[in-house]
Image 1 (cartoon, rainbow over the protein chains, first blue to last red):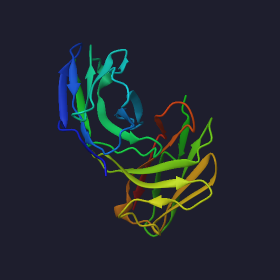
Image 2 (image 1 turned 180 degrees about the vertical axis):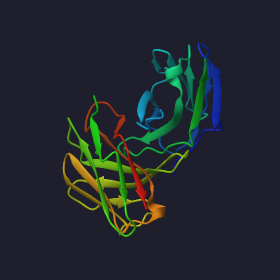
Image 3 (image 1 turned 45 degrees about the horizontal axis):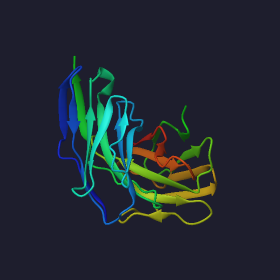
Image 4 (image 1 turned 120 degrees about the horizontal axis):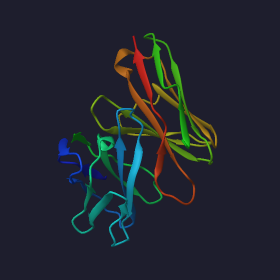
Length: 114
Length: 116
């Protein structure tokens, strides 16, 4: 069974600074996707970024990028130039190809200080 | 715009009654949908996989008779909480994935259930 660990229950950063959220996971699969979702106070789950495990290149979406270390089973999220709207719960979630299931980490609550 | 719609957004029901939550995929057909439960300040816990035209697959520890899932069409899955009790109060979220193309899951807005 897959396990996902987000070791930072809470993080805080000043507006415009950079913050990195960590995630480690355990899987026996060789082909899978990894996702970061954010959940703002509205509680709507929003996709932040995804990474295909077979790709060596780290995914980037505007201010969001990942550091994917497949051998170490590590998938951290870096948020550059933090904005107040980035404040949310962030969940790391691997998905096994074909199974479509997502296993969520415990989440990291990110606070942005103005 | 939203591609997965969940209704209602919130519901209050009396203890012992049943409540139905709907999850619709708006612009694609979903043979599989997923139902999650989220307690305050906690993560999402997968309850069951809803399979169109067949029985749902429940995760270990989830009561099948308490949480009835019906996936009667390719765009609609329903979760019925039967004989609800205060401990069933929670936030319930559904998700679905497009059958082809983008691999990410799309989530409904969630339903806050309060049993009084």
